[in-house]
Length: 203
Ligand code: GRF
Image (cartoon, rainbow, N blue to C red; front, side, top):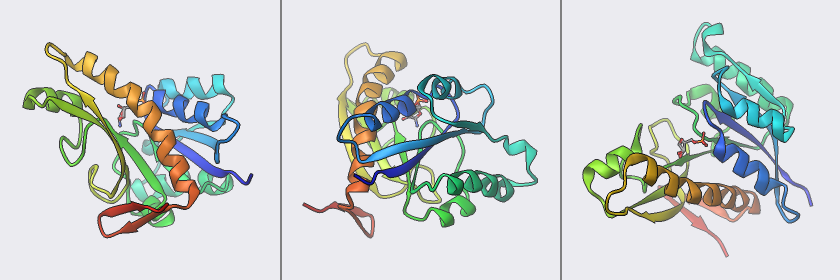
């Protein structure tokens, strides 16, 4: 089987990155993870990459004149590995025009809430403060906004009485680790079609 080439962009812990790599190693997986890129030298995700045997790069935004130059350097790494899909997983930067145009319709993100509720930082805290009974996670295409692109897949997660941010985050994370690989395989199955804001999954 010809497998789709994935890159993961991260800034921190990298648990979604690990889940994606694990899923890519299943016998019937239709994608492979070619590399990880972190904008932070101290990201635990870089250590995970080393353990998993995935090439990983730290690209420091500060080493470049501006965001466009930084993203051009990231794109060079991705293009060298013939990356077809870029997966943001805890990547704490807004994607700029360079990455967006070179990978138009080929950048995904995971967010720990049921979008469009609670976009941006601290989604689990926002959900608890609002008092919702159900939250969850969302995988979506990335556009120029914050967590605003067309939604591919969502998983609900119950908020339990007495949940704090950590407990809710942990429960959501279990679902994130299942949902992200699923969305990636859907992407490479060629069954996703974007119509306006709606992502249609063709049978
Ligand atoms: C996850 O909760 C993800 O939804 C959010 O950032 C967190 C990253 O966690 N975008 P990890 O680095 O994948 O462990």
